[in-house]
Image (cartoon, rainbow, N blue to C red; front, side):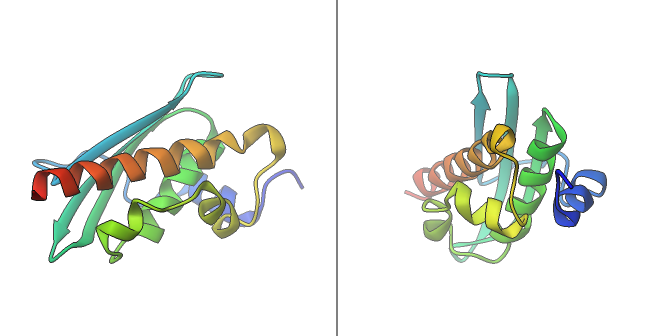
Length: 123
């Protein structure tokens, strides 16, 4: 099997997809190799990500990675999200094929950018 059941589930049933009004932080990342792009929106309360939404334009694994990243981020300290690694997302997805690992990189980069934006706005 090329993709794990977890990847397929998050691709077919993405969690937290969509926009957010007046987010506390936004960030995006793009993989220029194929044009995949992910944008995250964060709502932060008491230094923690309490609501996460995303938009993704790209392949199925990129959608799955953004969905999984949104699940991993919920409730975590924004400072921790600044250190999220692509490997964390890939592990939670039970792996990605070599030619699709960019999906986890894009999701992790976008989420880190949103966290940094939220921290910057906090002062």
